[in-house]
Length: 166
Image (cartoon, rainbow, N blue to C red; front, side, top):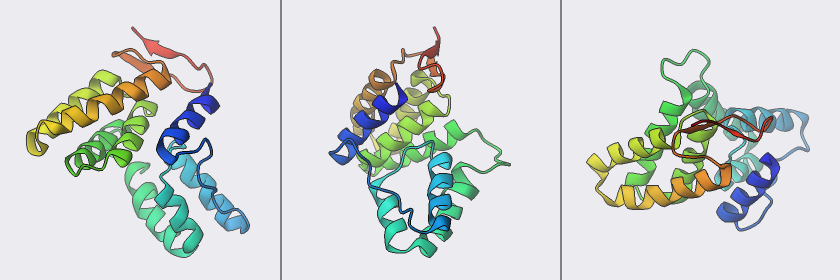
C-alpha cells in the first residue's frame, strides 16, 4: 500500500509516478540519499534531488541543517509533527502549495491526526489570512484520502497499511 501511495503522491507532485532519482554513483552519495530519505520520511521535493545531483557537498551541508539538525533532530524539544505544522503554516502563508503538501504529508506520517493538521492550518490563517485555510484544507483532504485516514485517525505505517484511532 505504501508503494502505491508514494507513486500517487509523486504523480501529483512531480507529474510522474517516479520521483527524481537520487544520485547513487558515489557510495557516500548513496548513503547520504538513504539517510535523507529516512529523515524526510521518504517525502522529498524535486529541489532536494536536483541540489544533490548538482553539488553533493553543498547538499550534505544543507541536509545537515535542514533535516539532521532541525526536523529529525534526535534531542528535539518538540515533536516532529509540531515541526511539520510550523513549516506547513509558513509555506501556506507564502502560497507555496507543493511544499505545504509535502509537509502536510510528513506531519501525518509523523503521527499527527488530520484534525491536528487542520487546526495548525487554521492557526496559520491568523497571520496569513483565510486563503491559508482555503488552500490548505484541500491539500489535507487529498492526503487523508491517499492515506485512508479519517479526521481523528493516525497513520500507523506501511507495515500494517491501516490507520489507527477512531
